[in-house]
Image (cartoon, rainbow, N blue to C red):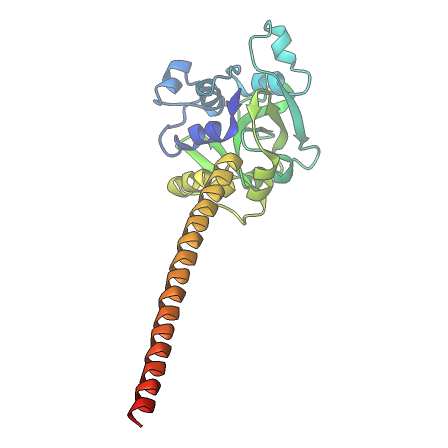
Length: 253
């Protein structure tokens, strides 16, 4: 099993660092020399312990409902489920996705990148909050891009089996109003408990804060009790002094 937050963190850690090269080898991608869209995706999932095929169309065939390429290649690769289809509009809603999902695109007239199975020409990793991480294209490095920038070209999205994620966390991401798409900004956003797949971390932090509040309240109560005791004692002493003074005055009279 692979954790979606770790998988997305692996992807975002390469933002701005790996130049694009169509047909990059597995070795070149593994050493962060160059990558294309599908070798980048393959590398990120490999680091998380999940094997995917090399090309974008094969990655779609492996992770779509039915897993066509998996059975054809002897069950070597991960399987998955289709979670959204672009249909005739070429768009999907980010609300149907979870961090770690794969988004497949096509429909470009690019002789250097002929469409593969189902017209697939490009693949990216969904990072949450309406953002994908991709190896974009010529003269680019790995980058974070709004999912909506591919409207009209989105063919489908799939969810890879053995990737653990949280629908609650994803909902939080969708409603947070966007993330900083700079390399530092997206990493900070993804590492924030409310915007990544970190419900357990968020709970632990909340529990810790509640525990500290309890200790603080305990000491405040003790301090208040001591203050009341001191003030009460002073009032008693003052009353006794007044009583003594009255007696002396009576005796003197």
